[in-house]
Length: 161
Image (cartoon, rainbow, N blue to C red; front, side, top):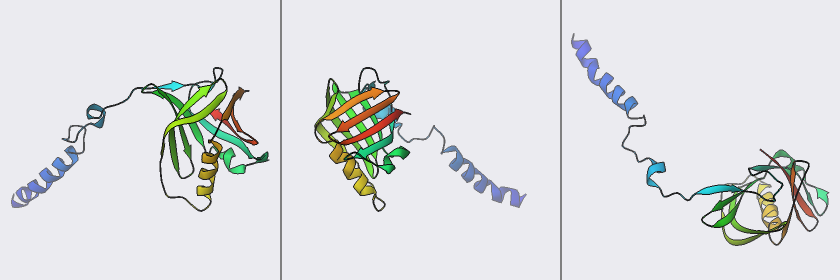
């Protein structure tokens, strides 16, 4: 009987620890306590479906870039707080930027938030290439289920995920 009562505190402690991991803990629910801005999907061009896109091909000065074929870059447009935002996830971190689209031309026009993360060797150059690509006017096209961005002799092709 002494062994039984000696193990009761350990069992109760373990039970309380397991129970405290559930949804009824005293931890705040961020979905309920944080202010949220409403966000809705936006289209790059009218004929392109709304959604997230992954890179399938690209070129630098008309020369193919192999690393873009593996979905290394993703892109999505959204409407938030009265603005149009481009979210691009690229090697070494994401970019979230206000853009203006007029006809088939996109331009980064407002505030930009660039996420930072550790980069493997060579991937920082890939991020820098994408950021340089997005400077100035980016032409938008959509054909055969492929979204194409062009800037001079450089291009990136995407498909929906």
